[in-house]
Image 1 (tube, helix red, strand yellow):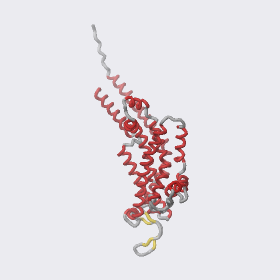
Image 2 (cartoon, rainbow, N blue to C red):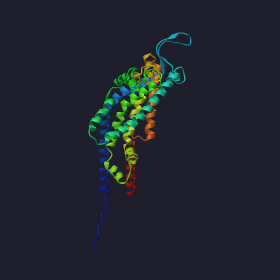
Image 3 (cartoon, rainbow, N blue to C red):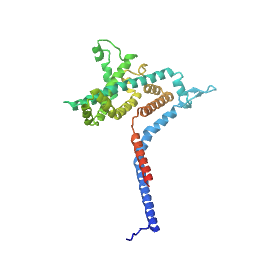
Image 4 (cartoon, one colour):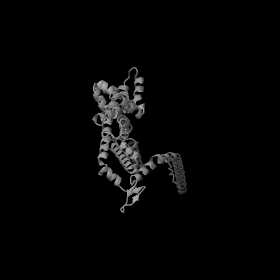
Length: 343
């Protein structure tokens, strides 16, 4: 019996290597063309973002290092126009003459944010659980929940201003004459009630969307295993609805930190108990103090960015799909290493 061994010819190896190189070049060419097309398609969006976001941000940052008006130089001469003052606007806000008002606004902003977001999360979760159940008129309930959130904030402030008027509905129900629009804790309570009423449905609707993605088979299996309603909520509902709930809470945090129109319309301006950072920046800009106003706005931007970063990092809110990207990268790395070992 004769056995014939096939011997690879060097010319065949060269041809195969040449074909592989050509295929790699074509693949690289297609990838480069795809990237160029993606850049062309995305460039209008980046241009608009640069005009409406980046330019105002950089302009505000620059303005915070200047002051305007008439000042005196070292020789006693009057200087008009813009003058570079460095970090003087920030120092004045934090430790200078305006420190008291600034820290009060910072406290009010943080207090309103923490209080309203906690209440909205609890009420929104309860609303989502109720709307998730099957009952007659569920569609009408879901549509009616949208009404407070759909009302413009300024209009909502006017409605609640009528409710909290001295002869309004709130005092009529309480049987007392509470001056809600005056400085004090009652003004803060009025802002919290109006804010929670308006934005709790937003949290509820986003949470409801997360609840609808949970398979009913999980609940049925848990019931068969004897799990109580609280146990099913804690072990199934809450972990699986966490991504949607965290996104809703993050959006509400960012919105509440910029609170301006509701306390402005409901209580009024220059009210010490409800003045926020946004209201303080607006007041300074109205008085043509653009440098301090820009400093307050820049501090508020940094505060919002810091809170958002801490929220995403500490609570694990996968907002931009980083976890999925990391997992996919790890799978690719393991696949490549496996191929290398087999080779």
